[in-house]
Length: 84
Image (tube, rainbow, N blue to C red; front, top):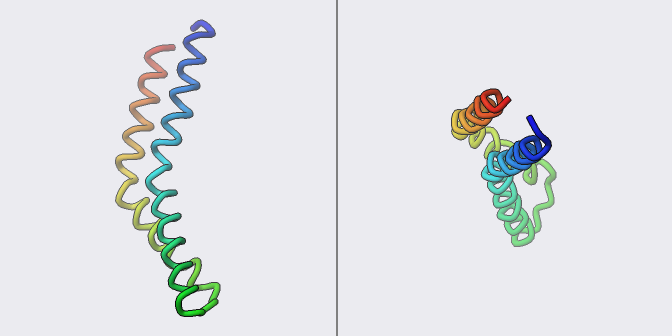
């Protein structure tokens, strides 16, 4: 495989990693923002309250989106192995 092909595959791998991780990271950020607003409004500064909802949402998101994420990565791996 030539350098252009390897560069294209590397670029596709980076874009795929962003697309696969974006939903989980986005949900974690959204829940973190909501919890921060709730803590600011109620002035409850418990550290468990800050981390537990994010942990639960990320675990559920990974359980729900895991098959899709794995399918995307497997499809890319098949494309790479066929190109090589």
